[in-house]
Length: 228
Image (tube, rainbow, N blue to C red; front, side):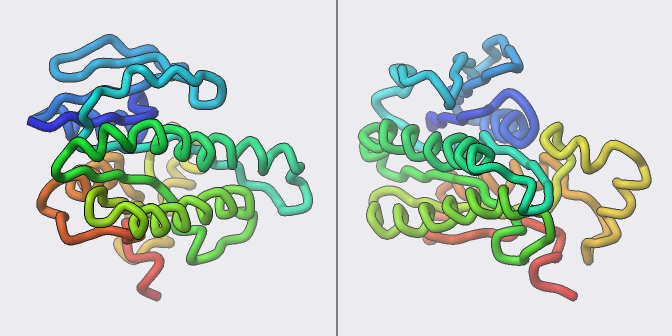
């Protein structure tokens, strides 16, 4: 039985990852706004990545870490403020960096440690009005590759870059049947991504089944990034 830490494990993809991992492992999961009670094999900790610095909940040995907090704000480039970019960078990049730095000793104590981060198809594919999210998630992709090189072979780092997924974070983009159908039709596989799609890939990247993979950006996106 392994021990995993999921930052932002109370809703959306994070919640799905916790459920997927809790079948056979011990999971420590954080929540910010969505209060969660402890469950069998899951301990929930209140933690705000934007303000709190107490990371004493990280155990001495950690087999895997998943960082889920993110934001999706779509606007024309000229309508963003400098503070908008700083906020998203702090949430998605600085927050991940602080957690990973604190967790490195615990990850080194595991014989097969792995870290999974999240990007977006918009980094490599390019969409209008996605400059804010693409900027911070592009940094996450660079961070993934740099850390994979620095900590090989002891700790593996991989990143999942989904297309639009049916989560509360994407609620404004999928809040009508018409929007759901229009977004589904943009993908070669003609459907929206599900929490389960991403959670299962996350569990795979944390598992020994992916032990020869590191520094990868996995495009779990219904074929959108590779098929016309």
